[in-house]
Length: 261
Image (cartoon, rainbow, N blue to C red; front, side, top):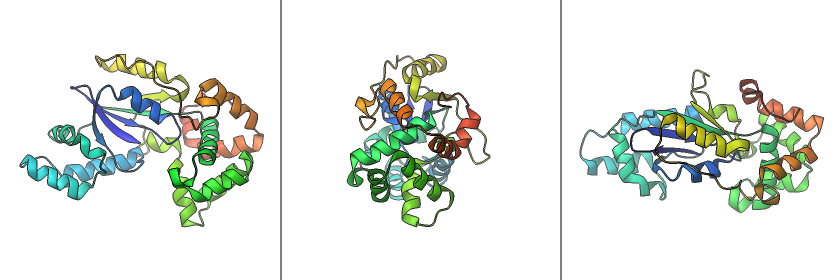
């Protein structure tokens, strides 16, 4: 998930890796005007590539009617994104600028537990991952992680690789093409309310973001943070921990504050 919001003065890019509380962060920021919804589930590098395309191919230097036609033809936003056309057009007047970048992050082990649970509960028709769905249903958590990691490290099946890419490593949402972190604010899934409110005050937004809703219901026991931690501890093993940490090595080295040892 990658969306642009504005409070009328600044433009905020909000990034959300899958199964990291991105739904909650979107709902919390939705009180501000949504400007743009980037295509797919882009990393920061992919967002920058889309921005380069917008600036080169769809600048607002002619009539508004011509811009709208070019935007729909050359960017091909989905139906939902087209509802924000007037806001996107206003953003184009500022050359699609981004003033602030924020990304949601999550304890890597909790995230993998959430991915496993989500795949099992939602079904392939909803998440589009039939192979991972089958593996999650047929295997224990540790066996699922082994399959996930072996295919992430040595891709041999294009379809499996495509499904795994639905859950990219979190570090990819924080760094650009130079491998430098460009995110101004990290929003921890474990302390979402605190981090969102602190960020809101820091950037001077007039609106109080307020308390975000609970995690997605695909997380066990209604998605509370405490129950999610309990589930993760129950599924914990030295092997699964090692595999998950290998997958999220970039984030762990960047922010080594996660509680599961």
